[in-house]
Length: 360
Image (cartoon, rainbow, N blue to C red):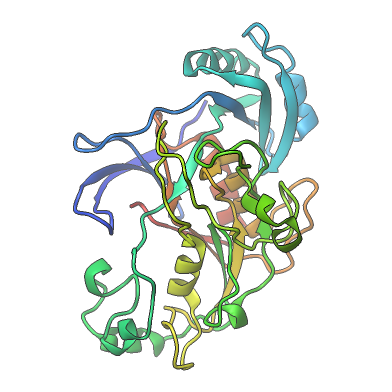
């Protein structure tokens, strides 16, 4: 069984000075994703019960029925497979009849990986969006030589004034390139509306832990506005606010993180409002993969495949495949880069899509 290569990096979150060690998935073509492991100065919430597994088959085209035949008999008494979902790119989700411990999940994984058809089996974990500025964008960020997310107190040091970005724009401003933002979804916004292309919502339905009496897919607040529960073609962001402060959850207002990232990428320029994006002539494809509690690997992997022009069973093909996929997200991963992630990312790169990520 092959595992992805790893790189180690030290990063500093925007909202504090605490250092975090990140294990970074890598491929021959691109730096991919940062999975955060606990640092000495931080605390990491214990992972909850395992509700599903990601199975990657050695045959590039895995189907739900193939995975179902592999996982028909699990070694843990009382636990059955309730469904298998084709995620594209050789990956499939195995949904379990009940949550199991990490130890029981490890036993299932060891058993399933003895099947010669299987490349790897991994826990379907939750991921969350990266940190973000707490103050909203406004004109002062540009007027005062501060491009939101790149200059000022949250800057990453690409330049000290507007001059450096003006120099970048002489080489191009995005010019209709499609950037898929895999995040919390989109909002109706005067600085972004002209630059959206059709996206998709890959957030699965299921109980939320961090909001009382709620579904992980926040679309439930108004299915007429945000679409039905589960995967659907409406990527509008219904908000990811939480009101539970225990069990690894924190009480928080909605982040609107997908809108923040989309604005950094491609906010409309020369309209005397908001900010201007790094690529103001690019198009943003909102792909919603993060819900109330974050986003499951299975939903994110399906989003990577679909956004890059790959096939996901039951989902209409992407009419404007992304030139670039942005993922400002990460999470707990004890074993380094999961094979399922690497498989989906390598397939996206092979289709001609560049992967850009945040590692903190």
